[in-house]
Image 1 (cartoon, one colour):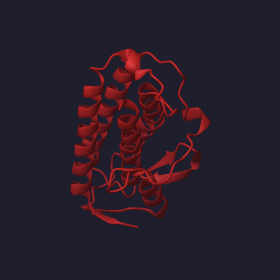
Image 2 (cartoon, one colour):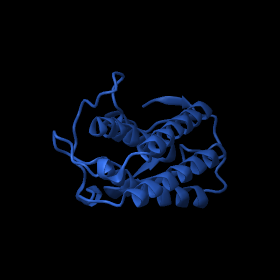
Image 3 (cartoon, helix red, strand yellow):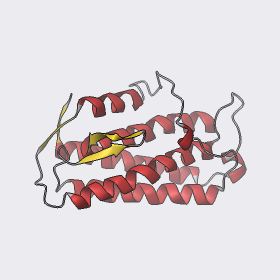
Image 4 (cartoon, helix red, strand yellow):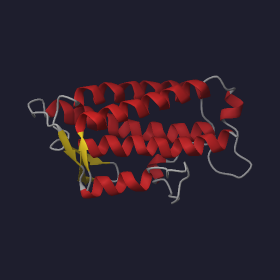
Length: 185
């Protein structure tokens, strides 16, 4: 388990999301055919990678919103102590210091994207989701992100501390942006 200064953690996550938004705006300039092209090495297209991230946002963003609103009276804390499970999930998602992904994983069936996608729709949904995520991160400064819990997508019975949910969601996006960069090369 890791200890964080909550302010530094949240501001770092905001910066990470802002960086992701910056990168997706570069991707928006590409032709839809390029975004739907299967890489020569196989795997997902660029749009499938982004749609996969959309599927996680469709689950986690409403969960985060609900958790933030149901815990309106939780007092903010200056520190955040990551939970064992949340820290583990985040750690396995994060790309390494060298920018590579060390452990490959298969996506759960309900998070596997369709083969051909509408570029404008997928990109617009992703950007809207990231803007919501930034809003929720700003609200979280005034909350105790160690006491507020959110259920994970693979089991409603397992709940993460809200700080770990944010960390996991952003790490998952960073992981797939490594994949996205490889796909577009």
